[in-house]
Amino acid sequence: MASLWKIGTNLTKLTKFNINTIANCKNVLKFTRKNATATLNSNVSITNNRKIGLWLAGCSGMVAGAVVLGGVTRLTESGLSMVDWQLIKDMVPPKNEQEWLEEFEKYKQFPEWKYLNKDRQMTLEQFKFIFYMEWGHRMWGRLTGLVFLLPAAYFWKKGYFNSGMKKRVGIFSILLGFQGFLGWYMVKSGLNEPEKQTEVPRVSQYRLAAHLGSAFLLYVGFLWSSLTHLLPNQNLAPMNAKQLRSITMRSHNLLALIFTTALAGAFVAGLDAGLVYNSFPKFADRWIPTDLWAIEPKWKNFFENPTMVQFQHRMLGMGTLAAIGLYAFSMRRVNISPRARLALNTLVGMSFVQVGLGIATLLYYVPTHLGALHQSGSLALLSFGIWLATELKRIPKI
Image (tube, rainbow, N blue to C red; front, top):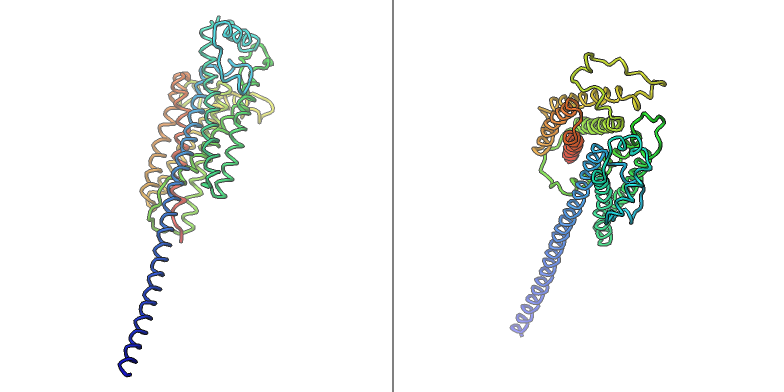
């Protein structure tokens, strides 16, 4: 009997051991499955972020292309060649000689032909060139809308967007639509009869600045969101919260200054103010022109007097260069990431290039290639500023 009791006791212990072992195995399997799921979800999130980031980078590139193409369209005096706006019909240019002649006759009813190109004896072939420039700019704008909207709809349906990104997509959609409206609103201002027949027909500088400013805002939104999704995290040493707030705010101030200088450039373009004083650093033989306040009331000089408009753009450009230089000097001993340091150095370098392009554009009487490069330079400068601000935002604070 004792032997049977001992055998029974051992069997009970063995059964309990097996039950405990099975339970432990289940716990291990649950833990492993949980970690595997977390890792898989993390990998999926990283992949989705990369897709969204690349899409937004493509959108920012499309907007940059539209800005550059728009600048070339203006510099070649092509912006008023299409005298109406039709969403679908505009997409197909004239297909034969008869249609081209009809389009040319429509163009001849408007001020640019009457007061400018009629005296230049513009030919049909020359008209075709300016027409295709404006048509290309419009088609690029519509293609930008498709590049944004189609992937946005796909990502939204697949659940790639969080609540914050959904709000941004909504804002980007509104800005894109508003940008298209502003483009035609701007062109329409140049199709009206000028107040004086001696004036060169041109679009309103106010509407041009609004159109360019809206494009820049859209570009900033796309690029900032793209970098947020694409740039990998770095192991960075934390920084004092007060110091971090200070250097971040000053980087944002630089962005505001770059943006303001670009908007001032839009007024220069709208008034052809780059052709008023083509000397540097003086204005002809003076440091300060005598006709800065030629218009009444005085406030209009900042927006309608070509001399004042060129003067303030010059001062803003040199002020931006100085502000970037001083910021970089103040950051020389601040411990920031290598990527942030690279962004800062490229910002400094690009600021010198941009000022050099501006001076060259002025001295050579605004040739098309230099004017387009100078406008592209403002986008590049803004891009490096955004990159720097994005990198600074990633630094942990204590």
